[in-house]
Image 1: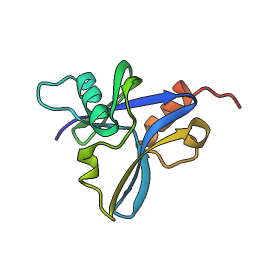
Image 2: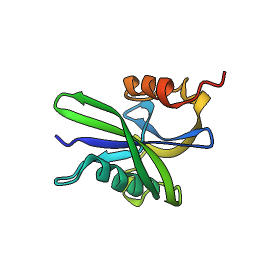
Image 3: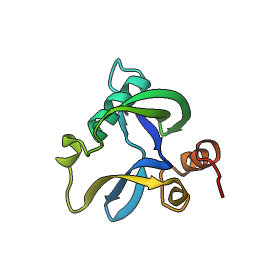
Image 4: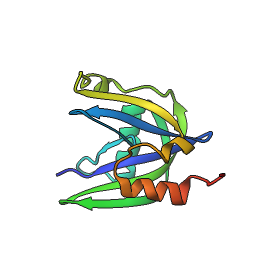
Length: 134
């Protein structure tokens, strides 16, 4: 079972997410992907974000490691440094009526209200990363 590395990218009060509709369920996740053999989680995060979003990112602090049934997910703070924000070709090739995938910048206030997975990471992002201006 492959591990996953994902990026928490916040810019101008918005967080970059992937809006998914899969098997009739609607939710949001961070951009990222599988850690390949011989690859660090940080390098996997950079590569996967580039593939999914077109963005080159600088990887910062690891914010979260989640383990479930032998699979780990690593989440890092990431800063966009170059590139254009667009859905990658490999993701576009997997799109269908039952498997929708869209990159979206969500206002951090709205982030508090959406269905984001994993829920534990959502709480960490809200408490530790998103400023509470309210």
